[in-house]
Length: 291
Image (cartoon, rainbow, N blue to C red; front, top):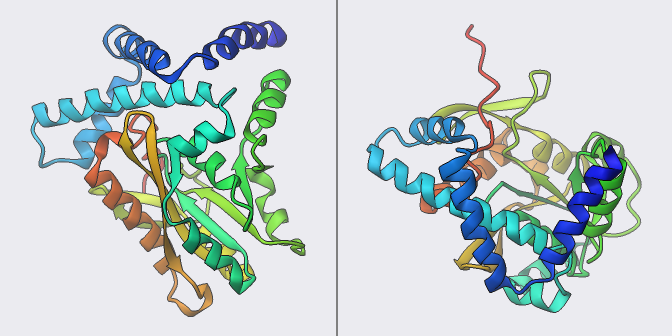
């Protein structure tokens, strides 16, 4: 059954990925109608998240963000499928690395980098684009899939431009090794932590929110530079990838400054373009225990 499911996906997704982007965006429009108007995919989650995050907005304002979000989500799905066959040249054209020279400068310190970002715009394209730069070996964390056929296919697809993938559960082991070259290790900071995770509590989008402290802890452990990276949408199908240096000397800052800074950077992006964040993600599952 696992092979049959993968085969059906393969014979549909691969030919679809070969189509030009204007045609694919036509599919995205149809997908939007299906998942929003017919299936109502996670509407309750999206509406609760928006309402709690923007208590000052009225229903019409929230509904506008909601619809724009679903359109953006469908574009993300289609653009992710495009990754199965997109050429290096086309991806570079559609995801421009704006401050690449500054990124190359970071390698001159001969120190590792920890890259932190969120589920904002097309983070999948951004990971592939940055892996093309040779100043650092880019490493992405992922959760292995239970279906071995999907696992092999997705792994191969994600690494074809140079990205190295390691299972999230092995990141501690990876950080403890002796580095033989310069690495840029990517973390997605807005996952919902498990109850047993090491977290920092802060206010994010008007809600008490648990944030992983892994970026800060590992940065201090290996004395890595910490950068916040994000893709800014210019128009449909075109992005500019940018980064900001969060901390150059992680062992010289007060506890949780790095964690708080990365959270505020992401929050500011969401406030500027709320439809660009993944609202259907159950971000606030972990609740703070009352003393």
